[in-house]
Amino acid sequence: MIVCSCNRLTDRDVRGCCAQPAGAPARVLDVYARLGCAPQCGKCAPTIAAILRSEKSTLACDCRPQNCNCAIEASGAEAA
Image 1 (cartoon, rainbow, N blue to C red):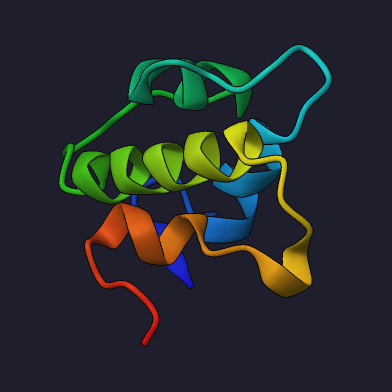
Image 2 (image 1 turned 180 degrees about the vertical axis):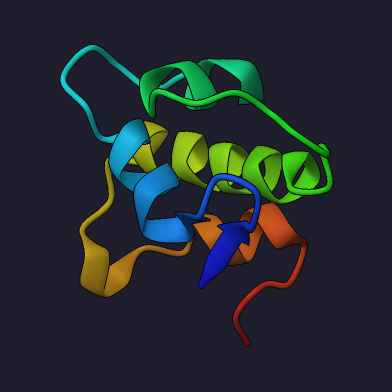
């Protein structure tokens, strides 16, 4: 999905940026810098921030993908 229309960035671009060997970017501006662009209108910043939070929680999780409940627990909805 397109996250930033101004720079034509997708959610895959942002997630790929987070997966780089140098470690996950800490701020939205770090994502722009790693992807070789700069913010234009800024409407995408909240979405990029949400992706960063999601990726950080995924990277901090050491569960196996098939039985990971971290995302469910983080959202406040527990499995029945």
